[in-house]
Image 1 (cartoon, rainbow, N blue to C red):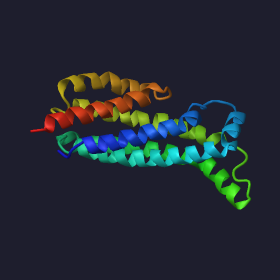
Image 2: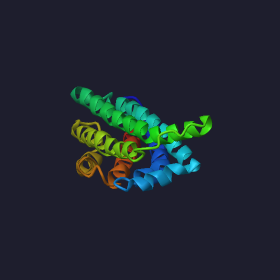
Image 3: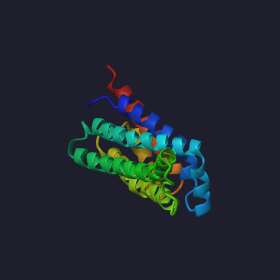
Length: 199
């Protein structure tokens, strides 16, 4: 099996960084249009959201790397891990593009003297949250469950505890908790497998 510590660590750093930078934007889901106009009117916010979106794209790519490394000894479950890992990563990338569109448009407009996107500023960030919650976290929950079901892949304690984590990540996709549980599971899997691989 390829080492999982490096891709797991890279994913965690990028994912946590993206959530920190996108925090207020993500937390504004279901707020009024005026809330998003206020957020996007600040240049510092826009730059932070653009940076957070870039980190989220990179986190999605790092998760594909992690899924590949984790799946190398997965036998017949390898394809399922790769498919669900790629689906979770795709959800992250789509969400990142949605989060980035409005601030990029306004920021670019401020440089060129154009107004940028004015109407409907709330739509794309809210779509981004849905893509993040449903498009990324549901396949991530399935990925965790498949990893738990793969014989010999995870230590027993982690395999058993992965089932409730998978359910919470997949079924509570619109809450903040799944993001935290998802990251903690990647950390636990990376550390546990890396320790087991040491001579």
